[in-house]
Length: 443
Image (tube, rainbow, N blue to C red):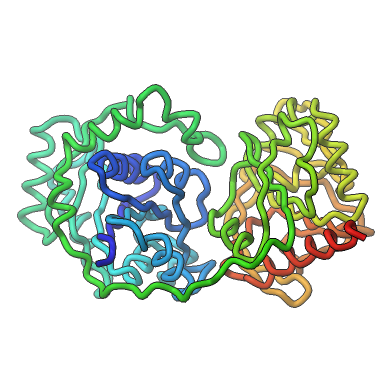
C-alpha cells in the first residue's frame, strides 16, 4: 500500500506552512511512523527542517523545472518504504511560474499526486470572513479540492470557535484544529529565507514543536482520510554504476544548498561523493577528480573563508591542473576574486573568475531560468542578493544570455541552481569529465 499523501498548502507566503509541515512530520515520526518529507518548489532551507523532523532527507518536487513523470518518479522512489508523505507547498496555493497557468504551483503538484490538501489559514485578523477565503481556494479550479483547514495564529479558543463556525457553515472542507499565536514556535528569517534548521531546532525545540502540534490538531482525522489517487508505480530500478570518479562536495554552514536528488543522480552515475568544508578544512580530501560547490551563505562566512588560505589555494591549484569544478550561486561567488559584504569590507576568495561579487540590500534576481550549455538544455532557479562586476570579454559565456554562466577551462560557474532532474545529460557530462580527469592523472 502506498504512503498516505498529505499536502500542506497556504493562502500566501509566510502563513506558517513550514512550521505546520515540520510539526506534523515531527509528531507523526514521534508516533513511530515512517515519514517522508517533500518540498514543492526550488527551496533548499525548508527540506532541512523536514529532515530534522522526520530523520530522513527531504526531496524537492517542482512542476516547472521537472516533468510530471520525473516528479512522480522522485516521489515514488522516496516513499517506497514510507507510511506517510508530508509535502510542503510553495508560496500560496496557486502561485507559480505565472498567473496564467498552474505550472510550478502547489495545486498542480497536488493534482498530480492525488494528495489530501490541507490549507493553512492566517486567522489572526478575521472571523466570519474566513469562510469566503476557504470557499474560494476550494472551488477556484474544478480539478482541485481542499480536504481540511488549519487555522493558524489564532488569539483564543473563542476566536477559533468563530472561525470554525464560519467555515463549517459555508464550506465543504472541515477544520483540523487551530494553532494559537506563539512567538516561541515562529522561525526567524533573513535575506535568503528562514534560518537553517541546525541553527534553530536546538535544545529540544523539535520535540516541543511536535507536542504543540499534537495537542492542537486532530492528526488522527488527517491519517484516516485516504489519498484520492491510485497507487503510483515504482520507477524502474536504476542500478548505480561502478565508481567512475571521486567528487568533493562542499558541505558546511557556508555551502549547504543542494537538491538531494542532484546528489543522488551523481551517485547513480558512478560518482563517489566526499564532503569537505571550505570554511574549516585545511586541504581538499585526497584523490578527488572533481568539485561541486553548491550555494549557501558565503557572505555570512566570508571572513573565515578568506582566512583559510590553504583551502583557497588548494581549489585554485585544482582548477589550474584541469580538475573539473561545477559551482553555483554561493559556490560561484567563492570562485571570484573577492566578496564585498554590505559593510563594504572586501574578502579575498579563490580567485578563479576575474570578477568581484558584491552584496546588496536590494534583491538582485529571483525566478525560474532555462539555460542552454553546448546543446544541453536545463532548468533551474535564481535567488540572490549579490551581483558580480562585469566579467572580462575574454571569459567564455557557458550559457546563452541573459542567463549568467561562465567557463574557464574545466571550471563552470553560475548564479543558477540547476536541477539535474531537468537535464540528466548535464550531470552525466560532469561525471564523465571527472572520470577523464581521473584517467589522465592515473597515467
